Amino acid sequence: MWKKILLLVCTSLFLMGGGYAIAAEDKTGKGCTPTNIAYCKKNKTWSGEEYKTYTVRCSDSGQRTISYWKKRKQWCLGTKTKRCSGKRITTATIACRSRK
Image 1: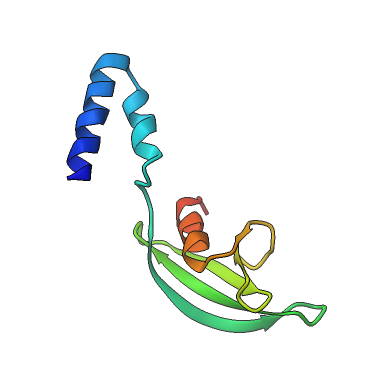
Image 2: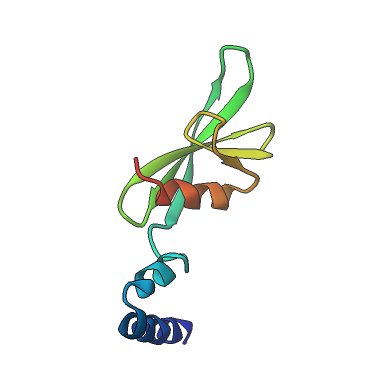
């Protein structure tokens, strides 16, 4: 039902105001999403800090890597701690939506 309403709203915005329908559709969460998150391996940094990596399979048939640090309190894209969040599913979604 919500998809039909969204389609109707986007169509009416497109007919009335030009390209606003595309921007409205992108913000609703459409796009690549994680379909599977699987454990990959356990690693250590040069300083001895342990982290584990997971492979995320995405709906675009791609694979991304995420890792967790600080006893599952920090989930990050790849194996670096630059782009992180507190939840695994949030990090997996960000990883799938980001380009390789």
